[in-house]
Length: 99
Image (cartoon, rainbow, N blue to C red; front, side):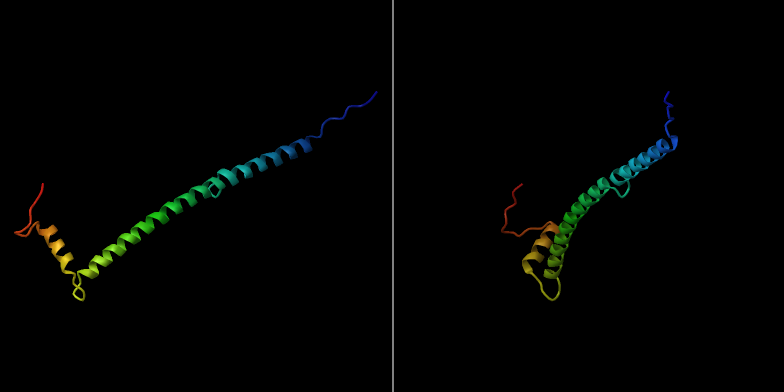
């Protein structure tokens, strides 16, 4: 007669713990706060913010140009005339208003 050996529960427990920890760390590497999906979201958000920054910088440059053109050192008469018309709502006597 051959004697049957009982399975080693220590090896089964060790394998189970190892597989559980491996699954946890793989899940954390993909889904966690510092995982691959979060990194892709951060890179996408960084690209959007970079585009928004460029648009704001262009707007600031435009406003600086207008401010310089209306300064005491350099006065653009045409721009001053346009701003006065926009703010005061006035027009010249030789102009025709189309509504």
